[in-house]
Length: 323
Image (cartoon, rainbow, N blue to C red; front, side):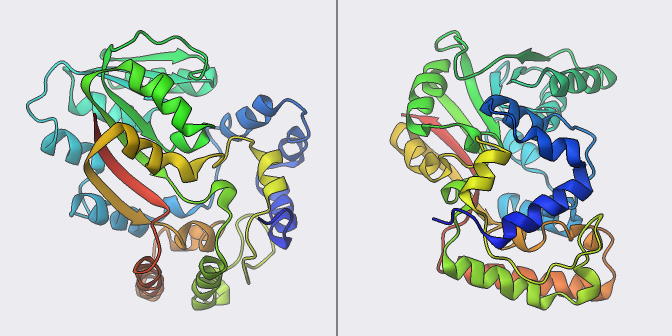
């Protein structure tokens, strides 16, 4: 376990430049839930994280659906729930609900309930749903850990990049998710399932630095700073707890807990073990790649594939049915 690393000090400086000193000072709040909320409330934040790269998204689509142009929402509604009408879906930790809104558009006969602690993000989601004239999606600002959901009332429980923010995963799944599902109900996840608090192995950090070494200096200038990304030393636990106490708090338990309560229908690992950290804060250089940058990305993808041959994927898309 790494308590403090050089990466932590670099990240603090970068955050001051990208999000401002008031945001960094908000992390000194003694209230853990307030620190977590500050990490998510800035919906219009400009970032340079790996998910903004179109070729990365195409890679996800290819690994999950088999088609780089097909989104997983379209894939699961057409392949697994094509003949299932009038389903009721519960999304927990839904944020701005972009994926839930997509599902609502694809399946207007479904009823979708979105729960999140951020009223601000849910207001934005409600505005988007209204613009798209959707009346089958509803929003609730609640603490889903303590909220009393009606037992056995949902056909599907859905998580997109939110389950890894819950603590005591096994207890949470059994006492919130399983209890909310009807008999034979489904769980759908698109999640980080790697090590708690991003405590990567030495081999993973070694490979992340191999990726950074592949990238020419001109493409390593860090977003909104004068710094260059030259190496990666891993995240320190202390900074992660201060920045967001919920981040990857019990992520390593996600798949074992799911497998104990659910039968696996489909489980698609899609990596990001190297991409997430190596491309963080420099991804803006690859949003509109020319032939040179495309060649670099292909080399990066090849390195990640090599790493995944002998290591478990940090991200998984899965469809499961209650035992």
